[in-house]
Amino acid sequence: MMVRFAVAICWLPAVLALVGCNQAPARPASAGSPPADQPKTATKPASTQHEPARFLPWLELSPGPGPLNAAANGLIVWERVTDTVIISIEPGNENTIAHLQRRYPRVKIIPGLKTSPIFGTSGFDSVDSWRLVARRVQELAQLTGSNTVLFEHESAVRSYMVGDCPLNMDDLRKGLRQLRREYLYLWYPGIGESGDRLERLVTLCGVISAECEKVRFVDSAVLHAPRFAGGRGAQQLHDLLKGVSTQPPVPLIYCMNDKDYWPLERLTDALRLVDTDLAIIYPGAVRWEAAARAMAEQRPTYAPGRSRTREP
Image (cartoon, one colour):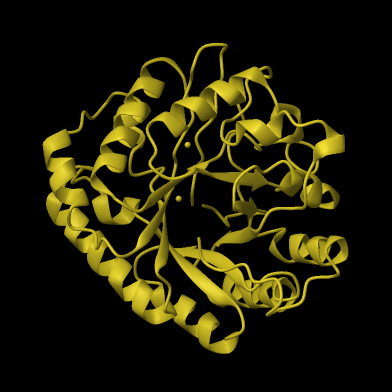
């Protein structure tokens, strides 16, 4: 189960791979501190909002027949409004993605990998563990035919983030070089935290950008919830992330419940605030199908083959 970074945004810069568990991500520790990503759109007045951005629904799939059936039920609805989704799994559950891809060939699945079980106690800078990650990535790409893979690294980098386990950046660079360069990597987390944790995350993102030619950080800050969109803290976080990125970050839209995150009926509103080519919608496993139905009501004009989502 994935635990998301809190985006604690003071009025100083604070710095963002996805989820489908039942647990919602931690929300910003400060009410005045929003998340960071696409600054231009976050501050656009409603009168100048553009058409909704392309989006990728993201589900973190747990093992077992129940979660698999729930994922399938959601895909039946999602294919009405998009032809591409992200489904992330823990190592060893690759066959579930292969099963869903065969069962629903009209929906392109971008595979995601939760990496903490691989790194375990070896550390995020373990070259051997990165070799294993690279093999898992290749296997997932072959199973789905996708040239894009999502990394969910949150638990894997937690000990580094809190200062308990410094990373050997030279070893980390060697580890990152094990990844195949032809794939695009969506990297979560890409921004969040404050103070020393923020500095560590900025350093980490800088190393990743330098070694991975094709990486897009997932920005869980700028559109974390309606109350954060357009805030100064979100802008500062966005600028920090963008400063160490070689490709545009991808904003993450949370809609686990209507109280703390984006209400399902406002998903299209959130997508209109995105000022880049792509956004990720994360409803959690419980609302996976409900979010699909909400989008189907809000975007009835979508026609597969005419408005393709495409891979990032």
